[in-house]
Length: 490
Image (cartoon, rainbow, N blue to C red; front, side):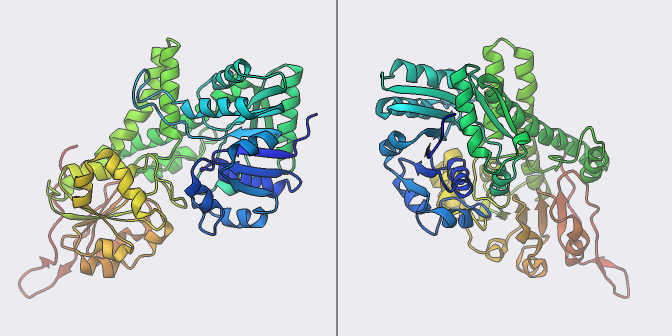
């Protein structure tokens, strides 16, 4: 069996950085070097201010950085010295050409393969860690074969990541499974055993699954497609709940107790986000179309369409409740990351909601405890005219400042801190009637309290019965705030 003493990871992003930090911590005899072209990112990894936020990551990095974990821009040296090379670079959805909007752009994968072939010698195990379409490993193998030297022998493996941002370190240390795909040749099996031995330092053997390369690649796409499908399924039911009087939380609990279904990923919200779900479903759609499976492609495309529908439906509800116009109205958006406990904004539903509201002329004041101002402006400027973003968007560093003089609060990310805010203080500083739109169902236990304060509460998947408080005089009771506006038909 090949003994792995040195590992190189090309790509210091959300996958490569945390994965290799945990490997270094769990395999103290292995030297791990994470490399990237981005000098600023590498400097951040070598500082106390890491480039990504992930609970527990700081402690892992500090425990082994400078001992057997290194971050560098010297890519060629790291490749030359490594026994095993992870390719962990971005694989964005193509924005032009054949497959635009659906197919994965593999230019960074190809660039890595060519660089490995150019500078390597000896025996190398090349592992695709990025989310890639089926048969991407074959592309890597063909590039390496076409450019190989007599002094170079290689094997290509697939080792997809199954991390959930916000719990990535816990997922890495106690994974549901580790999947390794490789050739069914003796050489391929020895390469699988080498990577198996790395994970075997801390992962039980029963949780390490080995397959052929193609099964490994497809399993990653299928896993994310199934998870996205569950979210879109419960979100479609949330729309039905709002017009029938049912509560989607109660429905989700009722069906989730069925052991055949389970309760995971049945949380209705403004829609899924993140780097993988949409990209992988669209990749699956494109794959099915390319293989002449149009019925299968249409099935998975509907998962994306329901997600888009949920975002637009929620945005339209905000506009409708605010008397059918948000022009020049201040709206506080609480949360910009696609989920709590991460600073990642990729495909965040807040971006889509912001775009819809800006199109109606709303003035947005955005607060997120972990997302930097520059990132928010950059994300919004990709979907809107930068001058319009500059005019309509203000980034707040304090949630109370964001809510002051606002017509409405929109909760877009389920940060725990948003359940602990002083809503009496917030209400006193808002324009009346004051609205709260809970896009994450994190304020359910506070509805009665919020309504007693004076808020009109709107949430996903439930018609909140509006409570009117009365002040008594000798003639007749008079509402102390305006009744809820009639909801427009969606």
